[in-house]
Amino acid sequence: MKVLVIPDVHLKPDMFRRAGEILNSHQAEMSVCLMDLADDWNSQTSLALYEETYDAAIAFANEYPDTLWCWGNHDICYDWNQRESGYSPDAADLVREKLLELEMAMKRPGQLTFIHRIDDVLFMHGGLSERFVKAYVDDAENKTMDEIIDDINHMTVYELWNDDSPLWLRPQSGKIPLYRIDEFMQVVGHTPVKQIYCHGNLVSTDVFSTYSDGTNIGTCDYLIVDTVTKRLTRIR
Image (cartoon, rainbow, N blue to C red; front, top):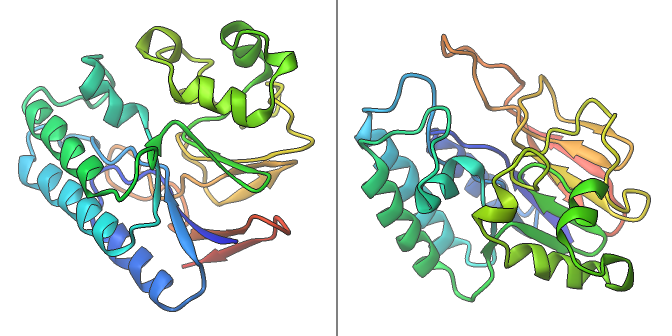
């Protein structure tokens, strides 16, 4: 399966237009969005931009109904009433309303969750560490990966609002042992990087985020992952 990855959006609705062009060109069969649709530098009062971004996501969900969505910390913090850098009190009600509309646009339950698995590739916002699984998944050593993912996808703020969780983990240093990384590729966003890169079986994709002055940190490329061969293709 060739999967287009839409990394952290952060109030850039035009990312969905380009993603649609890539899908329409048949370079990928489906897409996974790593979300963080909300929040960006100095944009807390830009309610029209929040609305435009979520409306673009909702339209994308309707046009490409097989798309999978992975909660980002900047989205679910509004549902969980947690304060996050860039959190907008002014936009809070709007974000919660639009998140509900986004879920209603999906054609089946489970399309919006924390971790998705396609073949031996895991898609999530931050990353899945050995430490988190050991601490929060009961009897993990006797469970399949699908059972572990299902357990995590039913977790709440009490388990997931911490630096080790799949919402928050930043494993790009290579110093954090990742769960069964020899078997499963992890495709993540959350941590801005200058270019899409693969370190072992960890793929970092957050190349659309910006510095506080609005200049790009990364190359603004999209990634297509072949979930069978694990071949990565970067596309502008």
